[in-house]
Image 1 (cartoon, chains in turn orange, red):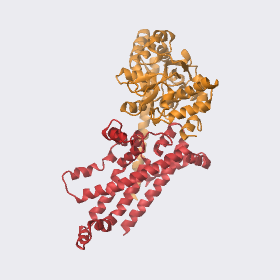
Image 2 (tube, rainbow over the protein chains, first blue to last red):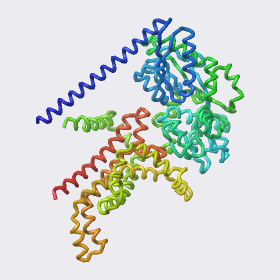
Image 3 (cartoon, rainbow over the protein chains, first blue to last red):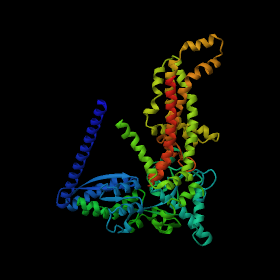
Image 4 (cartoon, one colour):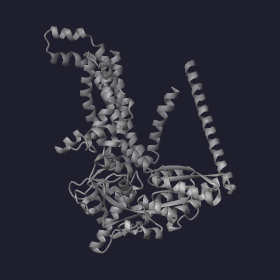
Length: 356
Length: 253
């Protein structure tokens, strides 16, 4: 009996300690935020903290862009920007911000993820400007072994016997939905070429024929690339910017651009609720504007993205092949429609998996 | 008792409640869903294979470690438990490195048309790896208890080596093998870290239950995840219950 009692009070003490720790942590967090607000209200001097919640792919580019912005902001206002950066898979980051992670600026892989933050009530103003709120573009391409030994040239080749294909699972990686959308959309394009109208059934069969050859369904795009570089598979379906970044690091890939593929668009938005709380609206808006500026756009191009800024896009046009039949998400009916038809509970993706 | 209730019973009850949060029909729908069903069946099938392998290997290794004295025996003996200490993802990575397409074994297997990594064999290897210590650790005390004179008596009475093994030694080890195997099987059912790296994780083909559950959580379907968890939990509970029955019968003797 004594033993039990003792154990119980011990547990109670442990819980009390835990609660205390949490309170302390909460307090220090708050005081940090107050510090930021003070900085925001005295624009002439001092520091301002900008919390950035981004998807992992932009990490390398941001390593160069953030110091540039810091310098620029210091010259313009005399304020020093202190960045707090968080890089996660896009869907995870969106859930974190919607769940209370106090990011001032959200940089995510797709509009649907910004929608999640918006739906949770954190973005209240229109973020779709300029360039529809998109800071970078890319396309979905095929990566093959050096020299393209299997002679892959378009989507149909992925369905051939013995070709091993890698793409990530769109259920665990939101970014992977671009890859599946590209294949599905290419199927729609093809049915349009053949019969003059879009056939979802044809597109589903098209996706299924490629899915049949999938060797591994990894949980993220990065995991797929790691598997490919490790020696698994013959072809990887991924973003052009990801492959260009890997090639720049000396890893051999051949990029094959299919005849029809999807334009990837990556958004950035100011998280209104958090900037108002932190008093960081000015600097957050300036940062997003900076990401749209020609100088930042040029940096993004260096990291393999396609520019959204027209001027920079023209300058760098010779670097990039524009696929014959490039389409964007609106060709598939917009994100809302795509989520409802492709990725819903009994949607096209499920039917492909369950072989219905 | 309080710890036990807080740490074990409450979370498990929580999973049962969660799985039924949308009623029985939603629960059955989640279970009867072909992809979920296939994942569970695949997991059970592969865990059975892994358990059988472990029963054979574990018995032999346990036997050698107890009966023979050779240099390095104590080191080997302590190595047995390492799969428990190692994060299972590291185990998965090792399997990838050793059996993957770039490796010697993987290359040979590929040459004769067997796919290891990203197919069922790799999942079995991963399960065998993480459940390796169970059988060995379960039979070791029994072997130590075994009176050497019984074995010697069998020999002097003219029994062959095989006969001695099957009629004297094996019956002593049997409860240990059985309980070790049951533990290994439950652990194999739930294995995630190693399997997620080496399986292709294609739903309906190479997706095991634990990874299926992870996918359901990631795609915001906690009810579906909980329903499959409940199936695994119930199965594991039955197995562990049988194990404790066996053990109590043994200690009763």
